[in-house]
Length: 248
Image 1 (cartoon, helix red, strand yellow):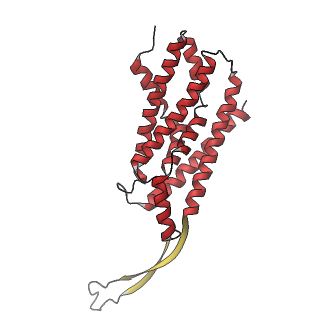
Image 2 (cartoon, rainbow, N blue to C red):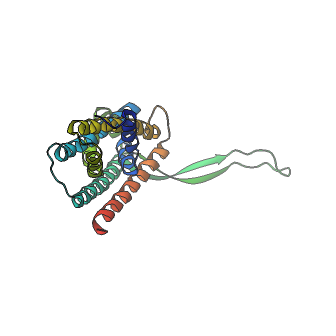
């Protein structure tokens, strides 16, 4: 008999998608998009990849009784850390490749206002230093924009596949201890995975809002967010590796 309530299982999968390492990974993926719909598709594919790994490990451990030591999952977690670092470096390189740092001066003329002590104020010209990122060329900008629309979702699915290794062992062991029936255990994993796909789809949509050209026209904010999320992903990936390899 299926003992796990359906809604509780879906909720567990939904909230699982909002864990810190998941959000950091998906934020780096969707930062290359400029439309929310494409980002949500990335989130769905991430969830499908994540679910594929969890279900595969579940099939190995539940019906086929393949024993995987708990120590092995530390290496799986470390692989996720490596993946997070690689994803952050890839995003930073992709960002730098499509931009150039522009440093130049703008001249501003202050229009004279009211007379001061009977003397006419003269217009004064001041120069201000401006530092910002700009597309390398109009052609390249157009090409990158078009490429963003046609890009596949293989990256999101691949990241999800690797990310499914993190915590999958503990989840499967929990199912094995709570559900003795093989069929019910696999159904639980499927329902959990469905909730995870929905949760990541929602998360990807929310995180993509600052990068949507239709909603926010703030290139500087978008550039800052890309750099910030990449650095956070890099640092968190290092922490995951340290926790699962160095501290063992």
